[in-house]
Image (cartoon, helix red, strand yellow):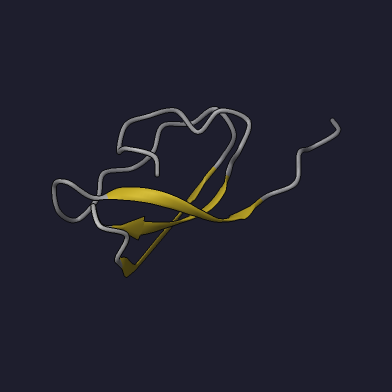
Amino acid sequence: MKKPGSNSGRNGGIFQETGPRGARYDNYATVRDNERMPPTTESGRGWTQVRRTPDSKR
């Protein structure tokens, strides 16, 4: 689980908001490679990757 404001690194993709005990919420975010994670709707929550986007070869 990634915290809000942390860097996605080379693992950009689609992330779902997750609670501290693993509960999943109906809030998704698309984050590109080397971008910061967006804020969550409540404190204590984080982001779990659902799908990784492929790297661009350009």
